[in-house]
Image 1 (tube, rainbow, N blue to C red):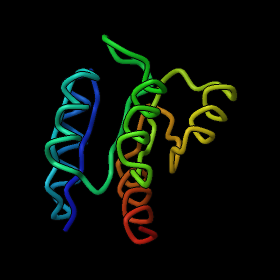
Image 2 (cartoon, helix red, strand yellow; image 1 turned 45 degrees about the vertical axis):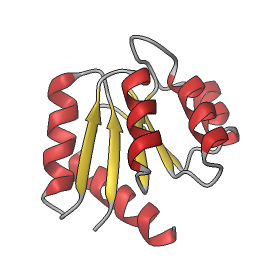
Image 3 (tube, helix red, strand yellow; image 1 turned 120 degrees about the horizontal axis):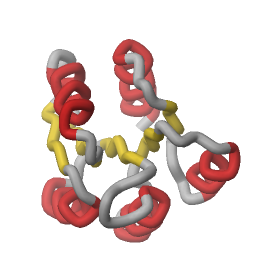
Image 4 (cartoon, rainbow, N blue to C red; image 1 turned 90 degrees about the horizontal axis):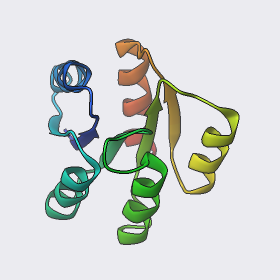
Amino acid sequence: MATLLVIEDEDVLGKHIRRALQKRGHQVLLATTAGEGERMFAAEAPQLVLLDLRLPDASGLEVLARLRARQPDACVIMMTAYATVEDAVEAIKLGARDYLQKPLHMDDLRHTVARALEER
């Protein structure tokens, strides 16, 4: 299956996402800060990134732009509890594949990830 990177500062949620996706056979890397996530992205070249919009050390939109600058075809799905139309539009303009609102429903998350990987 695929290598996925989850960049999520809420430890419990990040681990819950990792477990849900590992059950589908994916290798899931977990980062709790933008800096850590960007280092893992550079080192591991994951097929898909799940990226929180608000991180303690950077905006998810800034991280999205940097990831896409490093790898223009990077597949990134944004996640947020603070959804606004403006943020969603900006994320899509920056190249996000999708935009999920928290609280996440794991079935929806698994479906979105599977669809994104199939389309890659």
